[in-house]
Length: 279
Image 1: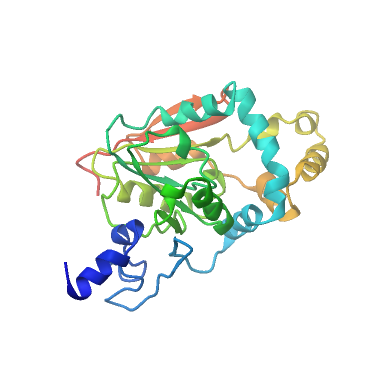
Image 2: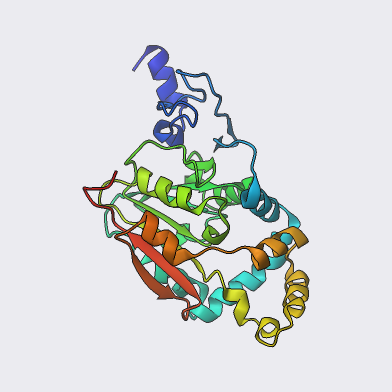
């Protein structure tokens, strides 16, 4: 291939070849700017930037995962998963078992973080990842060099991919605090191919009700404990005060979904396979 098209093909990252413009919905075709509307999509250190100013819970979550509080809290998250497996790998596989057994699958993880699930997936899969926290994406790239050029900083509510691109889409953790849950479910379904599984798993939104303080009417004790474990005040307030009805949400957006209890019934896993009748 020669000429301008050849230059684009040689320079384009894998993810830029799959991406579309968030403004006019036209394919980027490997470019770092939209040929139709001119919107820029810079690629910084092999991570594509396809995101605007963050608001609401997405802003709070990104600040937490990009900052020092996450590093302090991370051991506690791993301890939680250890008891739900037993072991974090078994806990994660309770969700990953719903992915297809398909050689060479093209798979998107929404909320990929630093890539804890990547090492548990088949080595012949082409895995792509989205997250709102840049430090997490950089950590994923550094842990797994194959992910360079496959990562995007973007919101689940506005995924920068063409329709029906992936053989599977999944998200493990974080969904409870997405800014717009319904939009995220629609977007994940949109970028999955017809009949491809879309999987969302997280802790029960009311998990904190099982904490000792809440059980005896001393919620302040739980707030103090979580602060000591590493949650910053803004993220803690979001965790304690945020409410989402997962069942009603899933019935409205994914009427054909299946729900599975995971993590000793302290978590949920939604699986939606789509249908020819979907919009």
